[in-house]
Image (cartoon, rainbow, N blue to C red; front, side):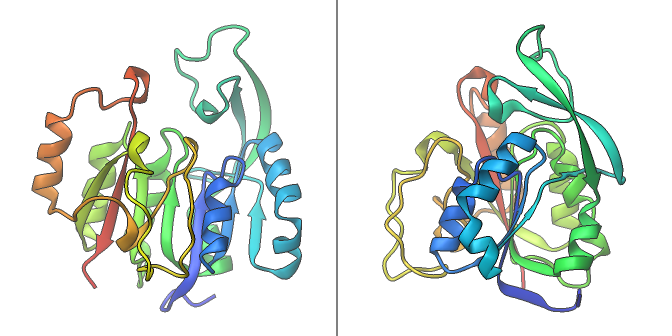
Length: 242
């Protein structure tokens, strides 16, 4: 697969959960690579999008992403969007179960499927395991998003170093405050209501104004309750300077 050409009709949905974001991307006319480590969620995605999988519009990778390939213990929390390979104090006795799950490197996806237009990452504390590969790429996704949380400084450093120079800081409870534009700025127009499990709009349709890195850091510093455990959670979107 050619790493020197971005595929402008392709989105990587890394941390697909039960496929809500994938459904949105498909409705907007994009092809989707859905990556989901949770075996129960991956089975839901496989059944939900069986027609799109048969048509080749969606590819399901029922594996995790990590810094090296292998098999790791996956912690499936009863609050299922907390499930992760990183066990924390959220995982008290009786609140989770474990599965052995195969993990691959982000580089493996790129070799197989090429460079996407938009790279969405939401893998509960391991987002840097994906973004760390950006410096190896000759051509980069136009847009990237990841969840605010552990590894923020490392994620922003690698994004800035590889040419991402505009950012948005989006409070995820507010995804439906502004309707999607018509005519659309990304793909086809769809009238869509985002669920709490979704990343939501992307690219030029993502809510808010683009800002430089120093402005983003100031907003992050001044924003109260910037962690999911305190009742709110945020995504950071980045746009490449090209």
